[in-house]
Image (cartoon, helix red, strand yellow):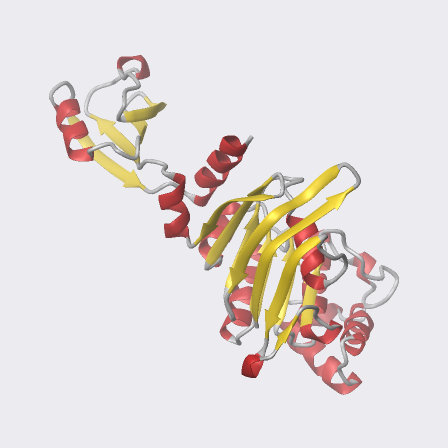
Amino acid sequence: MQLSVNQIRKQYAEMLAVDDLSFEVKSGEIFALLGPNGAGKSSTIRMLIGLTYPDTGEIVFSIDKGQTKTQLVSADFGYLPEERGLYQETNIQDTLVYMGQLKGMTKSDALQQTDVWLTSFDLIERKKDQLKTLSKGNQQKVQLISAIIHRPKIVFLDEPFSGLDPVNQEKVIAFLQLLKHQGTTIILSAHQMSLVEKLADRFLLMNEGKATLYGSIKDIREAAQLGTKLTVTFSEKVVIESFELTEQVVQVSSIDSHNIQFTLAPQCHVPRFLQTMLAEHQIESLQTAQPSLHDIYINSVKGAA
């Protein structure tokens, strides 16, 4: 399922939550909505799933055989809200079967899928336990299963990594990659930049209801115009004060007495920069790195502030 969003706008009283926002999501891709709290991500997701409606603009879903919809029905999509809402007093199996039946599944199909996903998340032995007996992380896994148990064509996930330790974060990444492999379109919002960078195909960075950067990691790196990070190991001890900011260097930070990290300007000619440095210092090694999604995110938010 593909999604096209064209100039949507949403205002609540005096607050403009989403301002003239446009983007597209391709069928079967993982698409990340990113931005600080209050950027408009959750407001956008609520409009996409039909909990609210845009004041102006258009949302169009493209389905198989050229069919389009401007609003999804319940069975079309899965939704993981940021605020959790499962029944704490009900056992896990009954909860998931009930959620599946609400989405149009038969009871037998819902039972079968419940066992499949609980096994995948190492929770099959606890399927008769009440939800309130689970840890926050395990409750999050049950909530994730409830969003996809009916095998929807498109899934909206608001903070899917919330409450998960690193081991379970990796399980959720594998879970989302499996959904993608099965052809599910996934739209997620999250604050864990390192996880999102390795998972998503394309990104939309938002701030104050507007798009600031949009596209693949390559696209947004080029648009952000952040320079390469260069980490240099010197043979002798060096002090950070001996290095000055220039047109080629926008930031200098000390790692330790032998290692300095330089953030280079986009227009910096790296070989010439190193040649100048070699005239004054003996270098043992160096490493270069492209700006991470975290770097781009922070710079985007600062630039739009």
